[in-house]
Image 1: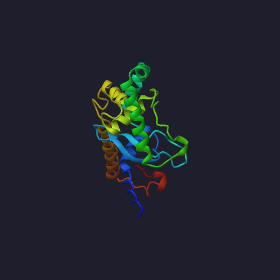
Image 2: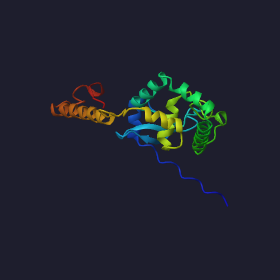
Image 3: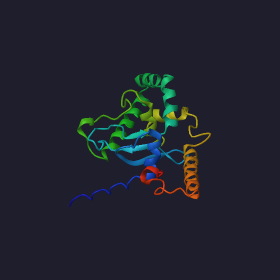
Image 4: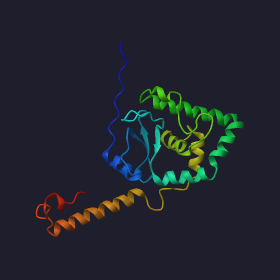
Length: 205
């Protein structure tokens, strides 16, 4: 008897893809789901296919997208946090074992999305023996929850509330409201794309 085929993940909501496009300045590719949301409600970590639509292997399963989050993490990297963590891995056996388990968890979650021989056994962020990208570890921690990636958890604990004082969602809602108001004002003034000369005179939101 054949094993049942796991259900396909639900398509990612277009509004979420739009939000990530605002964050990255480009449309995200190979997205399987929003792995974590910022407290403001917008995506801040995506779960990504191990092979992008153009065929490129992509080992970073959990991809941090929020520019405020990634900027805060970059500040930790600049301060030498990665070097200090890597040094601790060399003499703290318990931490090294937990870091290796995080690596295995990362690989297992990626394997659920398909096998890509080019990146077999390769996770991301320097796992399992060092730390070379805190963004990866933080993205993994946010997606998997506390207790899975110990160094990602540590880095998160070092961050201030990056979504404060004004959330990205609130800013984007205000921008959308202003755009809607401008369109309503134009309609109230009798602006007509046809009378204004066809497509050249039309407003495309």
